[in-house]
Image (cartoon, rainbow over all chains, first blue to last red; front, side, top):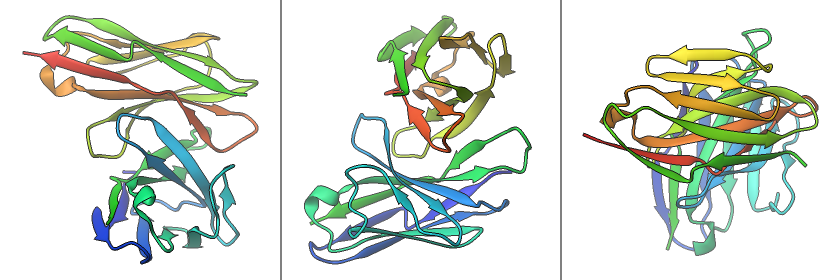
Length: 118
Length: 110
């Protein structure tokens, strides 16, 4: 159980284009999803917290107009990187919070999306 | 500010050579401490959640323990397939988000 999928797994785009990444919880409902980015050999950096039906909460230093987050249903959140530039190239990972286990508040992670901006 | 420090940064073991990874943390109120395993180019895979000092959890060759200031991930008789980066994270009682350490890269040689 507790499977999270991401699509696409890998994307290459030209500078100035927008890219949408989907995150789905496959076997549980997730009122809260999280978006992270990870640079090579570094740990995960939280970008934003996405709550179903409300606006996302962004971490300090993350441009909310550049990284658009939509959490339209209990199983789907999307991250759109607008007007992407080479410095946006990174590994983007989502997670979904499963609260069905009572006290357990575990985040389950997707497989990640490798974004390369040329 | 909540902080997580993991040591060592990297660890090389021979197959069958048991060892421990350390996760030291400071948090104003601990809701949970989490261990994840991450393989290169993949998302973290959940291993354990620990909630209070003295708690222990086991899964195959892994055992996680928790004190008020640190957690250990003990690896007994590791195999090459245990090679990965092991991440520790804490969740504050006041927040939903996780604060991650920088991880320990484990390499187990046959």
